[in-house]
Image (cartoon, rainbow, N blue to C red; front, side):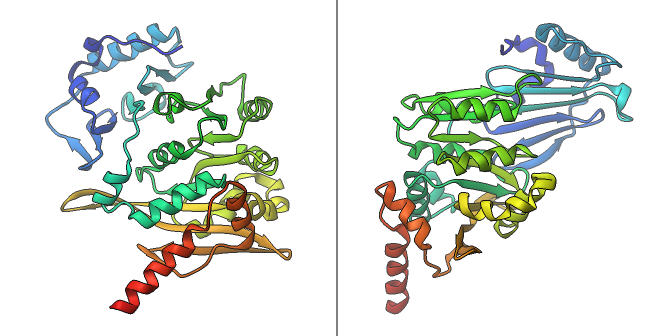
Length: 349
């Protein structure tokens, strides 16, 4: 059950909690740091939280959550409808108590108009993304911390057909699937210490699940995602990496000892890799889709085909297996028209 926290509990942090452009608020025991959608990450030099405030804040959150927070249980975690709060006790740090507040608002920040205006993606890329979802492709979104991987996953869910049942599985609610897609047949599952990823994924597959969504795959649960994809369920998840080319190896390594045996399955059952870049410039924070690749296995060989890189289409075509999948979703090859248009424009120049 999510908490309801009185505004007064946040003290000097309240203006940052209420600012919709701020995504993260962290106190490291000495300084307050903010993550801003447009201005990036920066320190607030004028605010120094007192030990009294920090201790009182932690105690209040622990009481509301009905949890112990002490030397024996030095990690406190709690959630409201749109905040995820974590406090680490100074008994296990050398830098006083640490506070992290992550915002998880039920909004979809990306839309076609904004993506084009901000240089995040052009119309051709958006057309391709739409086709991948309509064609029931299993998609991995990757990028660095703060690149906005989860926001892209939220955007992609808008193209899931309302009657195609979608189930999200998370340890903290971030996708907010039902709130941003009120027309969608969906279920949100939260994993706990007594209901882990394996059980959650198995349960989802028994619930007529057509789409299985996970805000981030971090460890061996990726093996269950791969197994779900092999049953025909479409997957959308994020995995931390700095290049889509590394995704197959990342998935294999995350699966542990059994990973190498399942490497071929990665190419068989995951279809698309998308990388989001984030850079800070004089204009502020700039995010953009920088890479799109497709995975394929044909004639007992694995292929990774880069179709978009550094803001340009490479000319690589979609493989036959993926085209068959798109056709099954009643989607025409989106890349054919995109490349024809690009070739025509190049010839005119």
